[in-house]
Length: 80
Figure 1 (cartoon, rainbow, N blue to C red):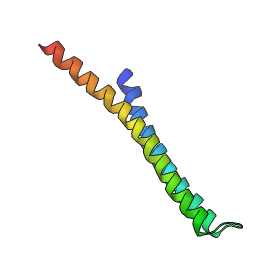
Figure 2 (cartoon, rainbow, N blue to C red):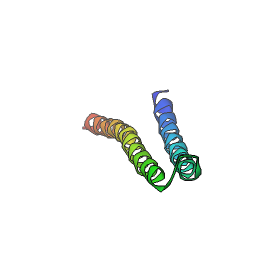
Figure 3 (cartoon, one colour):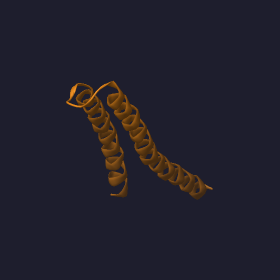
Figure 4 (spheres, rainbow, N blue to C red):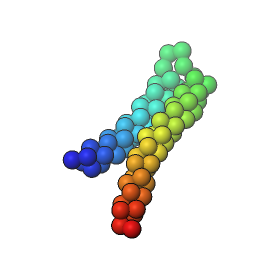
């Protein structure tokens, strides 16, 4: 059951990253063509949103990787 939740979390993180990328693109287009917008706010949103998405998604995948590595290490030690 634990593996189900870990695998589900992995899939959910992937969906969140994809939805975040779509949101950044839509926000950038809205800032570019919206009232009071322009190239500078759109560029700031694109760069800031991308950095935020990279840090957030990277941290989530890092935590999942730590779990997988710890699991493999524990299994290797049990085989000894």
